[in-house]
Length: 389
Image (tube, rainbow, N blue to C red; front, side):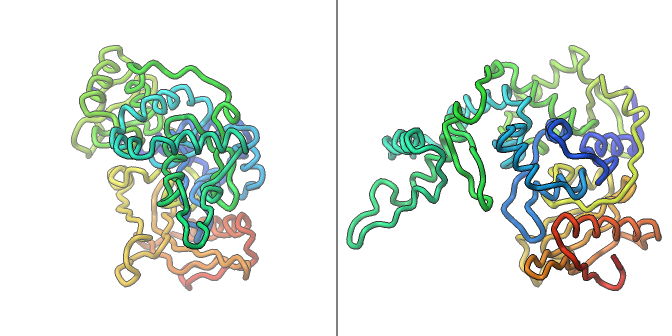
């Protein structure tokens, strides 16, 4: 069994995440689709303290790109579509046959919907009918207030919201567009070109191969914790892994200094022998795919990261929305930003380095902050004394 250096595993992971040259790529339809396909998804999140999570993830790779162009590529060119991968994500259109299988199997896998469907037999057809007749609609279009003294009707307790989600997850609806981050849904056949779903028996192996592609070298613990949707039964995953090992598509490897079983695609062994070095500095969104499995970040980079958005303010250590600092392939600290939009000011509320940073690390972090400010339209940066941008 081949054993690789820990640094080689970390380097290939950064390369697969398109972070070996942070802020250094050009955003276009091809580069966007390639990154999202390699990563397995681009996570969406509503928190907007600096910018939306997916916008920050792309900024880490592409620098200060045009957000209007991103919207055009996603919602006009349809280079990406919205579904679930690790959580709610944008996914590369080229991967849609596999996700069409997940959509087709959603009801079979998620039997918890049975009670709701039995209690609301007419809601799905009425919601779908409204969209078929009226065109793209959002949840707010189903929130008509009740007349005084009368029931609000069939949308009491927001059953339409549940119907929209169910119809989307089963592939009958697709996200047509977003306005102020609110989704509008339309019939899937009016948004996306039809595809043939991947055969059901092939999906677990595809899902596992996609995970290995995104990670480069993966521990056994990494496999279920990266792309967490749909939940693959442990026995199914073991069968898929065994089939890949028997066929030679995947191999078991060792990683220096790390216990347990590790795996890689056979085609990635040359890359693990000579992975590209990472050069440059960026800040990483808390919802970046680099951090989807935080135990992996600790194993590969020695970086113990926790999102403190949901931690009471008095108990936070590094800040509400602390973003890890990536410098020359290492996670060297974290920085808590806030975008004051009306003031056009980017504030660094705190910065914590894991050790004493060198001059090049400080300069790289300051340059990344200036790039982020340009991206956000901020004309001023205010930062603690230990970081002058």
